[in-house]
Length: 278
Image (cartoon, rainbow, N blue to C red; front, top):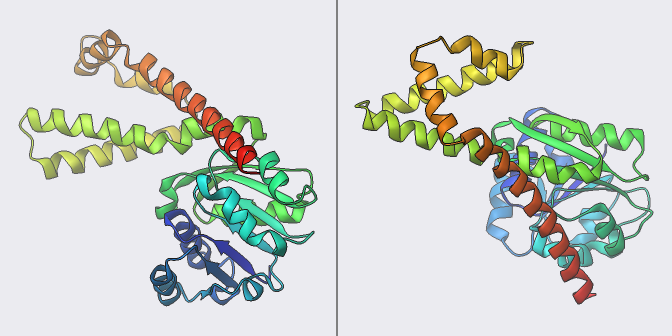
């Protein structure tokens, strides 16, 4: 790839930029960035990563191979309208706009354009995202490989059918918040039990990391791993009985289902809004 353009300069755009540069997927001078109006942010990114930044769209899109559209979903129509005349056939457009479907993007640009829709999560900031990609029929094998390589610089990457992306959003897109919620509860209980906050946090973090590593490296199912920690009449069993009393597992299932449903609702809302403004 000779040139990559990133439209938007928020946290996800910077996470991807950082991953690409850190993993040497391409030279920073080959990356061009712009945003709506925050010139100071662009200068900061240019100074930190050595990328090219400008509001000159002619310069950004000259000989560009791929464009990452990393703007807020509510700004999708405006952002695409802003760059539409520069989106030529053969160009790869990668969207990280949650809830904005490929068909919606095609209607705003050109159905002959190769489009990848990505759903990363905020752990991309530390290179630990779980990202799913969906593509339209115009994406070539080379373009798909490029897209996978871009998101692999910020974590694990897989491909799914687009109708599965709402479930991905509810599971891994929102997933970090569920883990942080659990960590909050563990920290509060530890402090209530007499542990110092710093000690509790350190123990919680290592416990979560250790459990995640066990899930990643063991061939055993989560249920089996749980049972192996749970001795009859022991402390773990006593704690799990409380979780079962409060139906915590069911609550997590309903939580993810509701987040998935909300992703679908947001997508419908975005599509409806774009139709009204078209």
